[in-house]
Length: 68
Image (tube, rainbow, N blue to C red; front, side):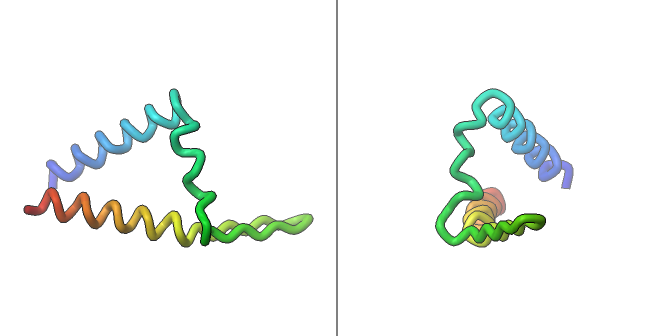
């Protein structure tokens, strides 16, 4: 368990550094085909279906690599 917490912390720090110093690297995230955006005068709805599928696939691959 401590190993996973350390890995998760390092990933979060790396993501924070990327977002702070190079935000253009992740501009595509949330704007993929399949992400639903609905806007009206008073309401905005954003449903990131494709982005969350991509995150799920990447996390599955990473976790399976570390478990072996």
